[in-house]
Image 1: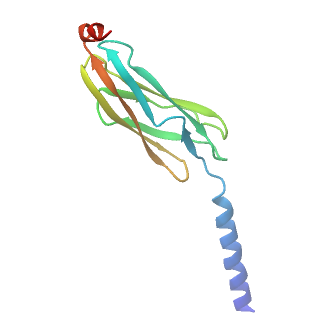
Image 2 (image 1 turned 60 degrees about the vertical axis):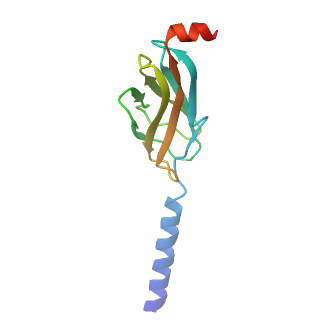
Image 3 (image 1 turned 45 degrees about the horizontal axis):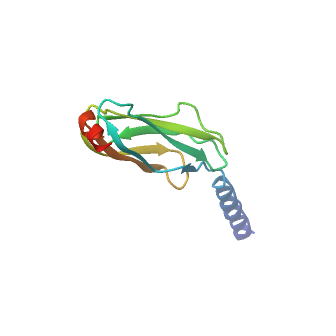
Length: 134
């Protein structure tokens, strides 16, 4: 009788733990890379990464940080409900002439991918160089 009770308890515990795994947030970015292309020095450096919570639990983005101080990311403050969309805004300092290759790390409660890397790329050109190209 004791063995039967132990087997039933373990079976019940396993079922309960399995049921909890079904409620997960999932993050799906529209694009994981934003290409600035060739932009003029001093131009608008703000770009947006759009994403959707494809899971069935609220998505909470706990931290967003950049590989460099020249790139400032801004995360959504509120949880993103299942099926809803959100935006991570990234501002690059376009006063720096040269290539852009930066990584932004996103940490969330997404079940399968709690940490993701998204990227920005492009080139900041001096206005005179950009005018000559056009």
